[in-house]
Length: 164
Image (cartoon, rainbow, N blue to C red; front, top):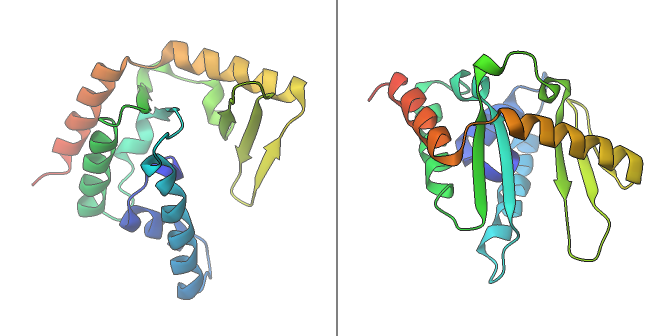
């Protein structure tokens, strides 16, 4: 689940997954993550498009209650005019997205940059060839993803499985 779209409780569970992490560090990390989400509250927010693997929706991070809240939040942010969320279906099988999470930032008049995320660290990439390779991966994943309206229905169906 992209950090920019996580709820507080979901983010907290993600950070609690780090073995031996002190509770104060978890709270600090959650606070930083939530603060970044304010980018969508700006007068001119950036356009944000994300592809989420369907398996992410079914992994019960924090249990049913946390997941229902997270999926409801995801449906809510999908109404934002600058946010696009599409689901890569499980039926797509092996995809280039399984190699690791990445984001690409595109700004008018500036070269694209990318952000690679691993379990240990994040890395900003500005090398033209590496960013181009990630753009190719994005295009491949995007071609496999459901359209927005189908993605919304998939999220609703998974949410129902978590019960009332």
